Structure formats: C-alpha cells, structure tokens
Image (tube, rainbow, N blue to C red; front, side, top):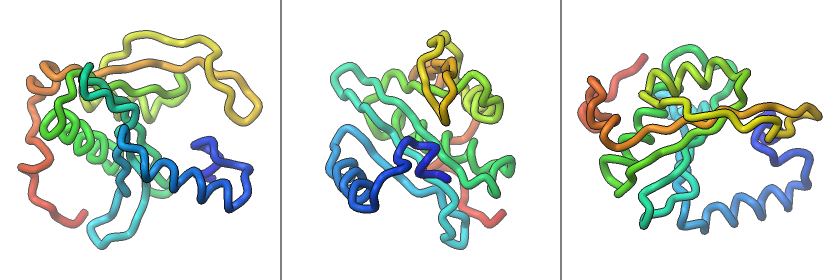
Length: 158
C-alpha cells in the first residue's frame, strides 16, 4: 500500500530497488524511518529537494495507517523541521498534500506550516485528479514556535 501511495507501484522489484538505490545516493535529500520507542518502523519521512544556496527544502511524511492519530506524525514533522532549521541552513521548508488530506493538513498546521496556495488538478492518484495544497514554514516562524526543539525532548515510551 505504501509503495502505491508514494508512486512506486506497480513496478517490478528490480525497478523499486533501483529507485531506492538512486534516492540513497541523492545528496539533495535525507530520508529517515519513523520508529516506535522499541525500534519498530511505522513510517518514512524525508527532507527532499534541498537547495543549500536558496535555503529551501520540502518535507515528506508517510505513516502506517495503524499508527496514525497517535501523535507520531507531529513528532516526526517537528523532528525533521528541527533538523532543517537547527542543523541545516534552511530558510523555508515546504510541504505539499492533497487538499482533501485533512489529517496531513492538521499535522502541518500544528507544526506551524501556513497554507500558501492550491495547485488545482495537479496530482493524479489512483485514477483521480486532485488539487494539492502548498504549505510552508519559514525560519523566523520556526524560531517563534513555543515548543521545545527535538534535541531538548527526553526520549520516552508512549
């Protein structure tokens, strides 16, 4: 299911392997697993299209449906945004999602992202056209967020 949602399905196993290896060697992106405290993987997040000169990047998040709505999404987004602004020289981090994806829009809003616009009928997914929302968080907005940074939060079990 996840492979289909991120645009890798249907493809042969060798084509999927080739794509993963190509992405692994892509220095314009950083990919991470979202793990439970016991090490169980429940998702994938990435900072892609990194442009260190302009200070821009895009965030992606995919969680196992069985683990959505439990706070892991916001934690993963916060951690990735903290990496972008706290460790990397980013000025603007963007996110793009279907306008009907209310869960993702909520997670992004909670993380401080502001919707900048809508790209109409710009995504084909499972045979349907979708509008996509474009959201962004700027460094100054991140600095003003009233939350601890990921490196300040003690790691505990849920």
